[in-house]
Length: 106
Length: 125
Image (cartoon, rainbow over the protein chains, first blue to last red):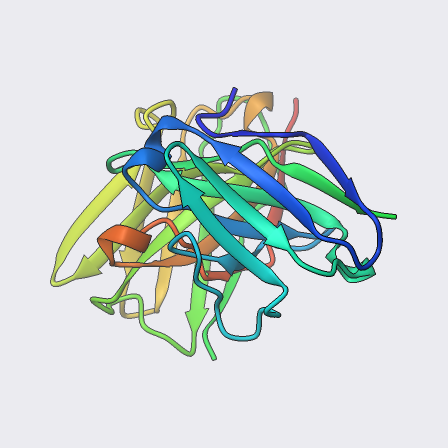
């Protein structure tokens, strides 16, 4: 089991908004990062420090955090956003990952 | 543009020691700004952090507690590479192994911003 808990699967209609959540005690103290992974590819960082987008990540991706829950929101989901999404954080000098959420764009 | 590339054996036998190397181009493994880490992903499963290493004059290494007794990560700044050694492998160590960079910043230490393409390692007799 993972230190961070994610829903295994979420779906969204094309063009609609979807929120993917991540829960864990470490999020009360440390920020969350979010990664997008498509089949056969390495993960890509899409959000860091709870709500910061790396260069090149579309602004439809946003993040937030409150208490023990971090969220990744995709506003106006596109077909190319269909992927697995992983949150992570730290717990002292250990990195922890969520179990991942499979996003389906309908 | 920083790029990472993993290399190592694709097939191993149980009880052997896995050795993987990550070659860094466009950046320096001796930079004070970054840690260099390994993450693995068993087939059909999620991401698992293995450990991370930092070297800029002095060295720091952190490992996942579940693997700590079997893992060593080191850096060769002269070759701009860092390596993973995992001893006494079993079938449970079968996974895609990624090397990745993350910042030497307390608040975003876990934000792996550059990843290698990954290398599949299968442990089978």
